[in-house]
Image (tube, rainbow, N blue to C red; front, side):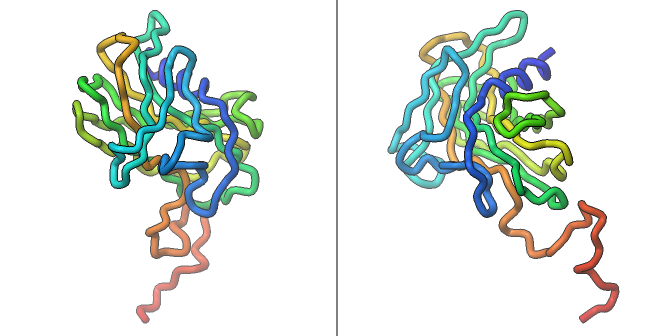
Length: 204
């Protein structure tokens, strides 16, 4: 039931963004604003310049979404057009979250794949990575997703927390969200697409 809630919540975050070189998200660091990001109805999104994860800027979401019989949730997300994105490399998703005054019962990085380019078509599949977040501290969620489904043309990428409270003044901060290919990888291919061409059994 909780899985259904968070997949539904992520699917509600439907603002398309252009793909970048490594991080496919637009405005992932909230340096000066919260443009390109979306929240569910009932929440408020604002930019703050004094409490980022590693730099001053961050996004602050106020409020909680209640969709009975599901538990309450809050979060932030963005729809990514996957046109032209490599289907053979492993994707990763991550992001920093800071619950203000509460510890959530669940914290997730969620990616929902769609068959159209605007996250409005058929829901093909979703990946939910569970993490932990502590009250008044920055915590990082996420991990490896695997390769893109061949028929996926967009993805709704969201960081979602499950607070026990339903207070409309509850605050949660988000920063440095990543969805793309690991920029620190030193290998040309990790076999995800069945390709062993860059590899050899000869020791240099």
